[in-house]
Amino acid sequence: MAEPSKVIHVRNVGHEISENDLLQLFQPFGVITKLVMLRAKNQALLQMQDIPSAVNALQFYSNVQPSIRGRNVYVQFSSHQELTTMDQNQAREDEPNRILLVTVHHMLYPITADVLHQVFSPHGFVEKIVTFQKSAGFQALIQYQSRQSAVAARSTLQGRNIYDGCCQLDIQYSNLDELQVNYNNDRSRDFTNPNLPTEQKGRSSQPGYGDAGGMYSGARTAGFSQMANAAAIAAAFGGGLPPGITGTNERCTILVANLSPDRIDEDKLFNLFSIYGNIVRIKLLRNKPDHALIQMGDGFQAELAVHFLKGAMLFGKRLEVNYSKFANISQGADTHEYVNSNLNRFNRNAAKNYRYCCSPTKMIHLSTLPQDITEDEIVSLLEEHGNIVNCKVFEMNGKKQALVQFETEEQATEALVCKHASPLSGSVVRISFSQLQNI
Image 1 (cartoon, rainbow, N blue to C red):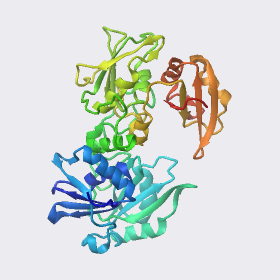
Image 2: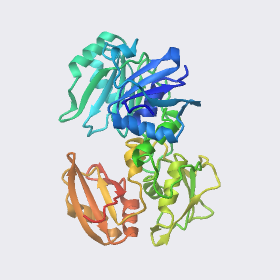
Image 3: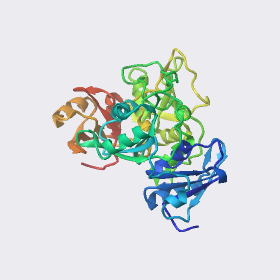
């Protein structure tokens, strides 16, 4: 193997493969600083921000064959340690271009295509915006109608914050020629074509659960490829997988039995199973009221849920969690839709969420709390679910969070199932299991 380099050489890049396809393949491993398509040779050169990011990518793709649009591509370290102007021939990494590559640092608040449009449109007509939100950070590609507008925007906005003290803009010229936008939604927008579809909205069971803004109308429609998801998994687990997880399961639908029919509903099941992946839809079985079907975003997420929740205790009963014989759940009057829920956890920071997957623990972690929250208020919110051994409120990146330790795993599971996504003083509380042993 060639000496490690932050520049990756990609071969067999067919004409149907776009710059965006390549960005999605490598984005989960780190920020991509330069990309050059060598169309005449069916090759590409791609520069990561540092060598460890490139090493992680190549280690992963040495075990998993990368493919884009059904075509296998082949990756190796480039003989170049850095992409220079000479290497790039026609590429314009420092030359002004109408497309800007924007990285947002210290992102404490969510940034959508509309927020970026408000920031960048004063400098000229913005035609298209595409955002990438992955484990390494948040990046956007912004296409102006003219190069002069892009130059003006970069000179004015470089290094500025979108909000006070956070969301700092780092702006480079992209060497892409044209952005491809398939959907007009929070993550991408074509301002020259307002008639593009968004994603289907599902039937909502309670406020927040069915809101548009989630991403999983599947890995497929929003351009989030299976390969990019696999890369996020690799980034989470350092190239391996947790013990007992094969990564080969393709069944997406789970059958859960031995539920408590009088205490369970679709939203409570969503709260528990969404720890392990995005939820498409859930169906409680009328003829077997202690059974439910849950369709996950993909087979890997379903495998995590089956592995970590098999035998978990909830409402005094031991859950039976297995794969269903049904490939998916048909949409109907008795299904609850979550495909577009903004409470699906894996739309953002997928690698981080994979890393936090575990069996239920006695300790839960609460985030997105009101800034003036007290430990007494948290105890009041949760104490109906069991004996709280310890509770600690702390601040991380200027945001209030908390750890709460229960006497048993079952009590902590009940608190998560009943109180995740519940409103508290204007905030929506997010709860997950913590792997910390004590506070």
